[in-house]
Image 1 (tube, rainbow, N blue to C red):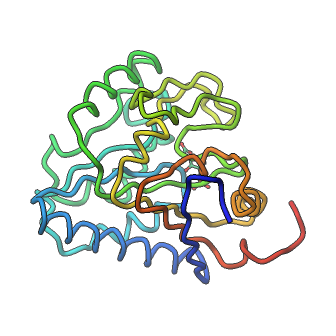
Image 2: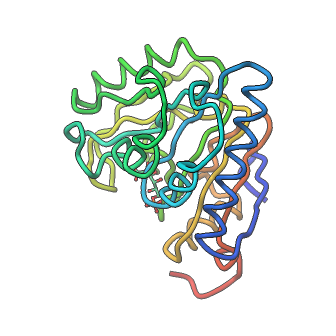
Image 3: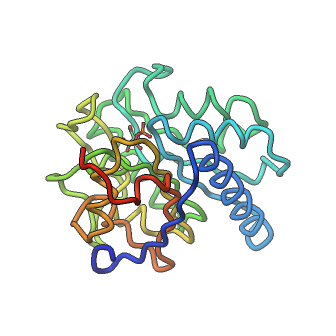
Length: 237
Ligand code: 6PG
């Protein structure tokens, strides 16, 4: 079961390494289909630590990198190049090592501050139709991207494509996030979920709680690669 309006396909995996391998294979299948159909593959990257192993695998992929367009689901308001920025993590693990065109990577200018950067990113996003693939993580409280419980997640169709976040419980407090509505405009949405600390969020999501992750509702539904142990009833955190 999951929240009304969201179709979820749960895919248990043995461990974080299998999760990374399956995520990498899914991304490459999505890329191959998009490039064959439309000549371009637009992907939204997840931040945090879980996707790193997937990004490292993508570094070795045999694909036409000139057809890839990279977006970020969210960014932390830190100086450019700061090691805690989501774009820095993706760059170090993958993007800096493959021949993407400089115009292919759409970083969020988070150093300009949440409000200005969200407005600028929303302007860029207004020129982009449906994403081919959106990667997302899951926080311990059920957050995804930088959509946190208690905030406005931008669920309605008229919501801005990018939101300024000012009081994120996960540091830093100032962030920019794509809205739930924008993240839902995708042919494929893939969550990557690993780590014992996510158990409570996974069980709440599975039980249909109104969490930010449950607000991502693309027409095709969402796929969740999740460590199998997190789906087993066990001691609550
Ligand atoms: C961030 C991410 C955030 C992340 C989750 C899971 O800025 O940290 O956007 O949504 O995906 O918090 O993080 P981990 O993968 O590190 O557990």
